[in-house]
Image (cartoon, rainbow, N blue to C red):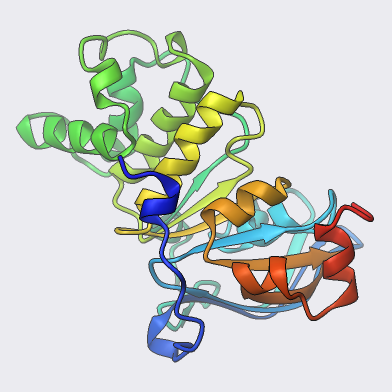
Amino acid sequence: MKSIAEAKEAPNTQNSAPTCEKMQSIGLNAWFGSKQALKNINLHIRTNFITAIIGPSGCGKSTFIRCLNRMHELVPGAGMSGQVLLDGRDIYARGVDPVMIRRRVGMVFQKPNPFPTMSIYDNVAAGLRLTGLKKGKNLDEIVRHSLEQATLWDEVKDDLKKPGTSISGGQQQRLCIARAIALQPEVILMDEPCSALDPVATAKIEELIVSLKDDYTVVIVTHNMQQAARVSDFTAFLYIGELIEYSSTKDIFENPTNELTEKYITGRFG
């Protein structure tokens, strides 16, 4: 696997035409009951780049990415308004199947969550079986390819029948990434995927995230400023539900235009 420095390329900050936008939020608002969590978020997410969402706890980071694949609506009492476009089409439009959206826009959660009663193999194959692919050579090939993309195959190829929970925390997180990859999503959302991991496992996940942008559009929520600077091409700073600043990661960390952004990334509040 390439190192982060080798794999990461400078983003094309001038190419902002709609053709390079994989997703876009337009006037996005979100609530939990009467509490407004997001306020008029307008943000475009470029194809095959990594976008980091940063901000203090409770600022709406996780809510934002859950709106990107319609998981927010699964929370009792949750509501939203505005639009979220995927390839220019509103994912909340009437007649759009939310299950299909969640297949196209996959999610990896903060804590590794392999299915405890399933083997490593079955964890990766679970979503495929729900779509009708039950068994056979094709299923085996997809499972292997997904584990290879998640840089886990060589570590588990002889233990595929063991429980998904029998491997280390970092390996479990890569297994969850393989499970998401198996469904061939177009976008992968990651909600603080390294927060429960040690530095060694974190480094492997970060290298994996950078390699994934060759095939996927990636959005990562992180509270770790150094991590955002290492892996992302673009960074959005949220504060109390509002989008304060969005630019290339280099500009956000080296030349922020908003005083709030500068205070946050320099540790003067958070």
